[in-house]
Structure formats: C-alpha cells, structure tokens
Length: 131
Image 1 (cartoon, rainbow, N blue to C red):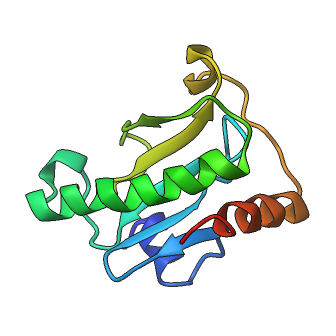
Image 2 (image 1 turned 90 degrees about the vertical axis):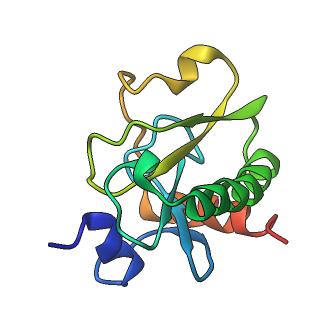
C-alpha cells in the first residue's frame, strides 16, 4: 500500500508543495515544530533512509540543500537543522527545521498550528527564494 507521502506526491492528498524534480518532493510539514518545517522525500518509496541507493541518497541531500537555503531566506532563523527519524511514516524523509537554538529541534514540543492561509504564505515565501 502506498505511503501517505506517495499519496502526497501523486496529488491524492493535498500538500503545501515547496519544490519538486524528477526524483524528489519537498512540502511543508502540517504538524510543524517551527515555522517553515519542511519534509523532503524521494519519490521512490523506500522505507529506511539508509536503504536508499547511494546516488539517490546523495541527490536527496543536494536537493535538500537548495530547499534549506530558500527556507533560511524566508524564515528568520540562525540555521536549518536536519533530522532523520523515520519511524512515523514508512517512506524515507528528511526534516528541514529552522532553528535558533538546539531545543527548537525537539519533536516533543507541541506542534504549531497555522491556518491554511498561513501555510500557503509560508510555502510561497520559501518558493520565492528558490532559483
């Protein structure tokens, strides 16, 4: 059965898309721990990050770097933290999380809530900095 991320990639479930190419898809996390929290996934559905082929893993990092640079310009933060947890969805994914201090990257924090309009604005702001 397709993962929720595959359903998002295929347009079966709506998402606040940030970027896409032939191999990767980036979209806002709808349960963010900070403003601009973005997920980057390979389109190929593989459960565990370290089961990705080397070229796909390398490509994911290069694609994520472009997205992270755009997030840094769109959201006030000191840097973009990254996390690979991989337990909640059986589809490899990388969290890009704007942070100002180490505690900003805690998944134990209450999730932020944004309106649909706020999510759309955040996504548009990030996309405006993609080259």
